[in-house]
Length: 162
Length: 434
Image (tube, rainbow over all chains, first blue to last red):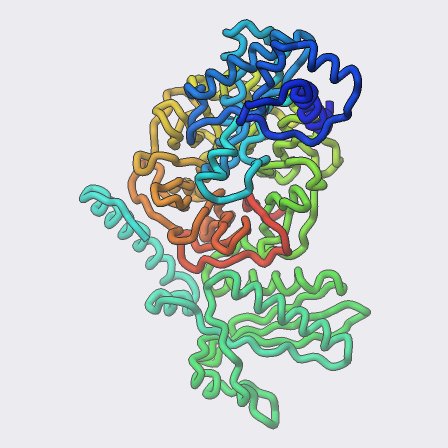
């Protein structure tokens, strides 16, 4: 399974649901315009539950920590609801770190973040078989900056629909 | 430079210093006259490098190529003060050396030679003189084809350093394996020359580690879509993947064995395992909740230093592999990683993330004494790795912007960038020559 697949689907899957109801979740990163298929429209409008629980693309962590913050708990609950409303969906949980600290240690830390998010979702009833984890350590920052604002964005678990 | 010492440590260091000094002085008496004299002085050896004489277009080209190699090689050691050769170094008529002129510019040593062509090959005849006494110290010939000019020049450098220090240098045939962001895992000569790319750089590849016998290269590779430990037999060019679920991080070969230690997470926690060159797991070395990562081994392979979360934020621990628990080595600083055990076995270099936002390189004795800060005021300084003779450390620094490789003496002096091409580089590991 190539990374391109995950990426492509990361954009498409949440986008399908945002078509019907993309009202007010500020945490959602606006995706690129998706292929506007009839099937996509139908799925999106048909599922009010899904509209209320769009897959949150990222949850964030404190420096050198892998425990789930209070803010992330609500987002993980929403993601669990999304997975319940979309029972055939699968997700990849990518663990990432900021550039501080060292590459080796951050590879392990990224995996612990992804595992922590996965375990939290399992406790909420999500089938573990529907989730995979991967760590990219500090190798794939979303913000290349060298300041706390950038670091805060990079310390994340990114949810990628499969 | 910042040191943390206490009275005991000062006393211990003083005794150690005296112990080190004693055999040195005794040995000097038995060694060549020159070494004995050098002990009384200090600092760099003032050396006048003469232009290699040659007749004929090709010979002149060869000579200037060898001169550049010798100048670069000797400069790299940090042992020499390279002097501008005085114009009146040779007597006008006979070409004999004018030692008065050499002395007047402060030269202690003179080297010069001739390049000729013999049966199509380059023949280099080099001479070394003690500029003070006018005595010839060495006369040696080197030959090879055009492609071997660099190795001829470096062989002379090695012979000269051995002559003047009494020790055969391991520098000139050592190499650096590192990650180039653009070109993937790469190996260069000690001075950044002769770069060879092992992977393509299209996928993430990390932490290359060459086995002590030089036969195998291990690294973390994302070609399969996730991190896996790859082990390549450099002779047969065949590669095996360990293929365990989870991450594979920071391989390091255990000295005195053919096994590589690496952090794997397939059993649920980040633990360090020994893996055979065929990719099968030999045994597990750590058993502690939390991250255990970045192993490095004592020269005899009996002990392992590594990074662990067992006491909270990452710190460096030392574990005896014959049994017995791990003892914490670092107590200063709250984020200490990337240990590298010195070839002499007495010190560990590591990187420490500090409160001021810098990451700096330190060395510490394996008993926890003698903490020494080597970098400071220069952003991130990471991934220290000792030269095979322990006299220098290669490391990554962001002091000039992107991630680039730098070198310094083992006491932190003479920090300078490695002459590598464009693009960012990181995770260097200094390895012995074949």
